[in-house]
Length: 183
Image (cartoon, rainbow, N blue to C red; front, side, top):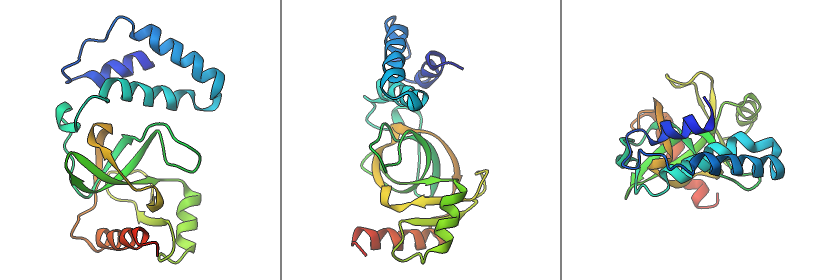
């Protein structure tokens, strides 16, 4: 599926379901721009650009039928990034939902991150192993130093869940609080 078709699919179920006639030209111009200035990141930028254009005016995911709760592991678009930030499309763990926003911690299934997280003492580390919750294809690692609030309209789908009453979730919360305190 191309970017134009994907962007139309993103609109499905929204009040703005009609794609403006300029959309194709806009996306072709943006693709040419990204090919020139960020050739290794064209696809990621195009997907994030489409999400921003098509969902950026949503107050929350509820406007487009997205509902999340603490413990949900979601596929989402974090948007464009600077170096050493999680961006574009990745999974994230929802820690809480407050006033139409979700506090999320990005995660990766990168084996090197998983290995590195296992070699570190969990206290003092920005990495946190969560294993392989049902619904995910690989063992995963949280990037606690990338936690942030997001508009829930950035969420594309819920794929897994960690029970907020579980020891794992409580351990993540405890480490999150340590990081907020600078420990």
